[in-house]
Figure 1: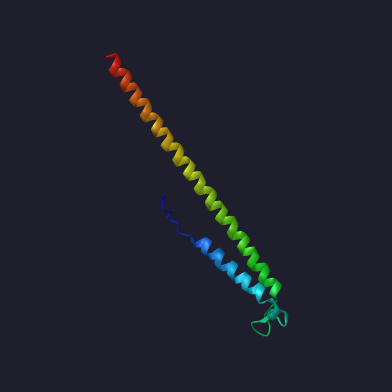
Figure 2: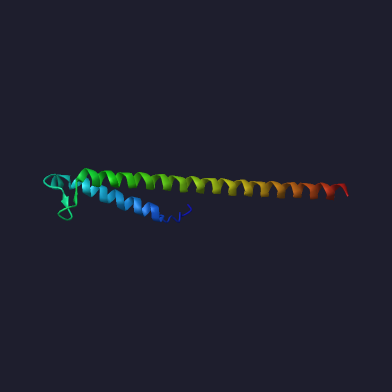
Amino acid sequence: MKKLNFQPSFLQILYFLIAILLLSVIFLTPVLISGSLILTKKIIIEEEIIEGILLCIMFFLSILIFNLYKHEVYKQKELIDKINNDKKSEKEQNLRLSIKNTLF
């Protein structure tokens, strides 16, 4: 069995880290319900805003990752088509050579 050499991209790692951060915010909701996240006296962040921002970032990253995969699939299909065409042309060349050798 062939071993796959998978290395996650930067976007995949970022997506995973944001997912972990979002889950931890969701699990810490009971703590946040008792009070909002107060950075300074003027900046108060509600937990719904944090969750909404993280979900928007994750959605944007998932679109980017999807487009990267779609582009990679297209490149692989082109490569497969090129390999198949090369094989066809090689077979045709061999056939022509064999016909030429049998006729002459």
